[in-house]
Length: 113
Image (cartoon, rainbow, N blue to C red):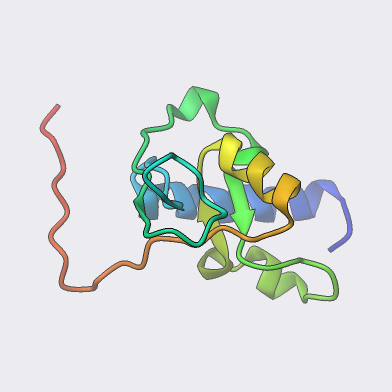
């Protein structure tokens, strides 16, 4: 995907959809020590990330983008919303993080304002 203002707008739209899906909560699975790139049992991080603090570092592709189509790169199903620290851990270890898998029958609690 080439860097252009048009493509950035498309990517930003994908990011908005991902944040909505995640309710601004980290979707990365972490172990009991808060690490994402281990072989230990994991649960969802669930850390709430304020919209004002969200950067492109909070969006992690499920696998490398190299050689992938623009459609694949922009597809929200291929992107995980997570803490920036998980993205950095991914870079340091060379392993991709795992994401929380939503159950279509799952009830989602939305707090009243």
